[in-house]
Image (cartoon, rainbow, N blue to C red; front, side):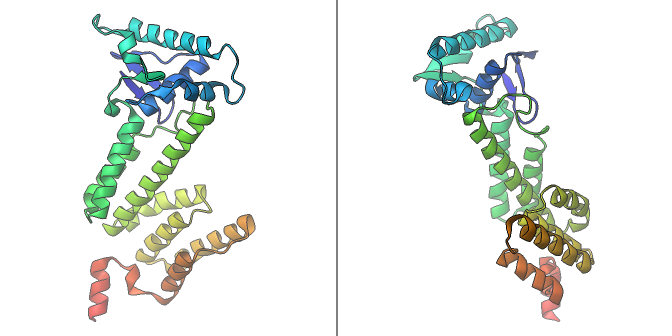
Length: 267
């Protein structure tokens, strides 16, 4: 089986689509896939489907949904030796989707992002950029965009989105350290427009602009962020961003690539 949740939901058994049309069955399949290969307890599934208003008939209704999912799996399977109960198994007071982690795009994203972070921390910026870019390419749009989201899935989606943004920022940072500032400008301008209160993205845009010889535009980016923060939240930019602003004003050599900064210091 293969399940994709980083965008519109897709699920295949032996290449045959098995995503149900019923909203609650889609929720169950999505939550089981995100937790695979660990089990999801019955109370967690009930909370996802009904929130705090769990009906008396919740237990048999949940069993019916699971049975219908198993039937879809069984109908799609090309291997007569595979039992749907083994794929969507009953375990530990709940249910488990027995699918390898690398067959769920969200889990594969997390694996690649973690490997990219390790490469970044070790100073291997090229490998970090490649791994993080591959991880981010798995996203086909907002996660589970066509699946109703209850309280349990909502937390999962928040975790995934935070992971996506962290991977994106780190990939951009690796590319900046590789001297790709000119290539990054277009992407960073779009990201800053989409996230007008995001200080890290603004800082990365400022550094890219400065290294491209556009210190004035870097200061304009800082001014726009400062205005947005004051108007929206009543806050000033963080001390880190204020230090970056002063560094751009003074032409601090530390803003250059490490090899350039070393030559300036030597002179």
